Length: 140
Image (tube, rainbow, N blue to C red; front, side, top):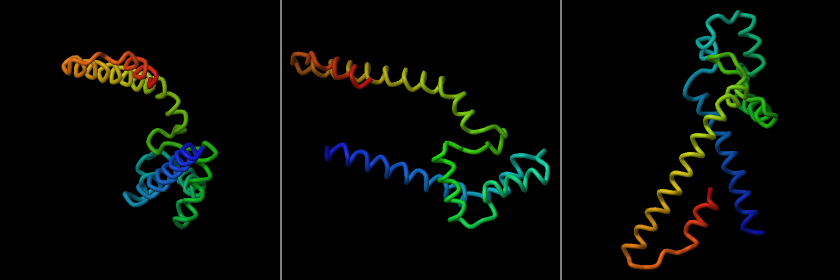
């Protein structure tokens, strides 16, 4: 139970770090208001002001961060500055290809590692552990 709790706390800490890092990375690396204007050249002035107010871009960093966390926790990942589409829709469209790529590479990596382990075992003239393939398949 203690191990599970420590892993859950570590996962939560990692998610918090990623949330804070991503927020400040895009604030430090550039100006979100200028990025919004540059990313949407056809956006009207009224539309631009609406987005700036909606995203709290004229507020302080703490207020912006609070809005960012609240929207992220509610699944609202915002709208892409470049395509003006909801980010969640863009992620949903890319998910099948991503899962195919990750799944295929994971299976190939496990097979390669199992073959390498078998090769090393044979070279050492030891009997191959019958649980090797079972363990490798369970990691998939």
